[in-house]
Image 1 (cartoon, rainbow, N blue to C red):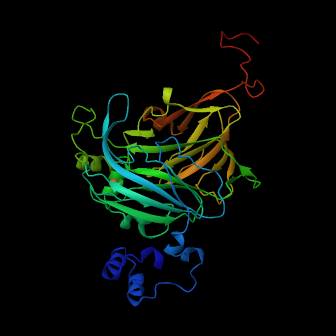
Image 2 (image 1 turned 120 degrees about the vertical axis):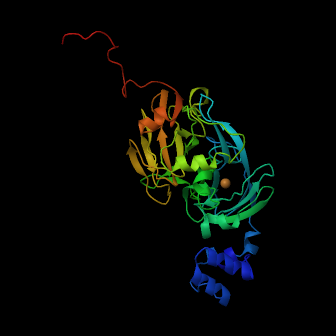
Amino acid sequence: MTTRISHLAGESRRDFLKVTGLASLAALATSGTATPATAAAPAATAPADIATLERVTQKLVDPPFLPDHEQTAGPAPRVIKVTLPIIEKKMVIDDEGTEVWALTFNGSVPGPMIVAHEGDYVEVTLQNLPTNSMEHNIDFHSATGGLGGGALTKVLPGEQAVLRWKATKSGVFVYHCAPGDAMIPYHVTHGMNGAVMVLPREGLKDVAGKPVKYDRAYFIGEQDYYIPRDEDGAFKKYETAGEDLAESLELMQKLTPTHEVFNGAKGALTGDKALKAKVGETVLFIHAQATRDTRPHLIGGHGDLVWETGSFADTPATNLETWLIRGGSAGAMAYTFQQPGLYAYVNHNLIEAVMLGATAHVVVEGEWNDDLMAQVQKPGPIQAT
Ligand SMILES: [Cu+2]
């Protein structure tokens, strides 16, 4: 505790504790006895010790891809350095040219996946580009400490802040912007969310505790948009980021999205942008939704191993047809493809999948197995039996 807030010295530290409602901690901060005697040794690692750890810069990539990473790690924790620029940009979100002034981490919706191992430190340089118009910050569900780092990372256009958090829990987690009040859902529903994967140092394990290796991993970030319409029912377009604020907030209160999409736009993961796999490959699908519940389903396959709540410390569920991703969380599913062909990976609220956009495709190459499925008779006229 002392380590995490020690840079909030004197009055500002007490003010921070007061505004976050932690009055008793504020009193402790004043008396200088905030460190409980029972503090666990790992949590008490001093910054001087962290300075001796290996530092690795992680190059972030646009979803659905993950940054280069190892699935297992040695015993020595590392400091994973990432630079996360915030970019306000106009994006087209369907094939009818509907636009949103997206608020993005790193220019993509969702923001990029960050990968670490349990025990590592993640050091994030959050940069609010000078061309932006709003204040932003970041709340990591994977982090431990007030507001997930939100209070320590508020940056105005032209500013940056650096936050370091320890990856104490393994699993997949959402991160999102949380600048306060109604701006929290406004920013999140304009694209400002992403995910972190904290792998166990020894890698993933199946139900029997045996190691699980994936051949590919994809990050599917599901996004609900609320695009205001004009008096003719057409989706409105705006000149600048934030111009839709009042109309958007009014629409959001109806809780009915106009678009529910994977990776920023309807069709972002279909057609020539479909995900790829081969028969025999194990694919890890990480699915995040920062605000609404969703229920992924792989049409034609199964969730062989499903970490539904996202915690890799828990034994995965097996052979699920559909699983639940709670709003404000990420989950992971591993499937070993058995058949070639086109698979649809959907939010199995089929209205949201088909009409609002929450569909991805997986094109799988390989040899067909008649034992698993065969067309015994082609479609034709009904015959007497
Ligand atoms: Cu923001």
